[in-house]
Image (cartoon, rainbow, N blue to C red; front, top):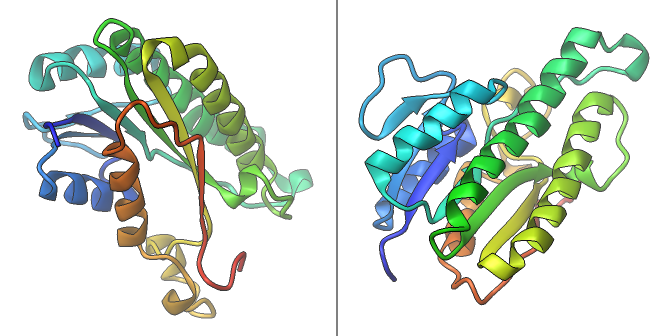
Length: 223
């Protein structure tokens, strides 16, 4: 396998951290980007995915650090889980801005570069909420359905340029979000390492193979 140059956006979160660690362990050059990066290093840069200027700056700087981009992994996410009638406009906007607009901005900048370098892979973290109807998920589901649609369009627009986009729809993954909810057992969920393994397998596929969608769920299905 040739060395692959990777940006993991949202790389300091539970899933993003596991993905970053796995890909580096497998010999890839990985730049971790996140809004939580306080002190930047050559392999860890700050980005606000809701800001166009911040995202453009990230990709320009990453190009000088990594060289041609091979893989983009979008792990940034935010969720406000309330009934629609109790959802504030602020929470709605933040959810859509982080999950959908952030994915759009990062994918756009990646595609602009991949078109001139022979292609690459875009891997977007989705959710069961992008294809199932669940209560308390109005803003989150709307944003994730948007990511599903965007990923499909990117595949069609990129196919002549060797650009492949994958939606990885996740069931429950045991992260810090669940630690305050002892009624849910980690044994009934995916681990972050399960997700990282899946991302690595997609990232290493040759570009003559499309992986349009992966649905990764724990044995009990939707909790």
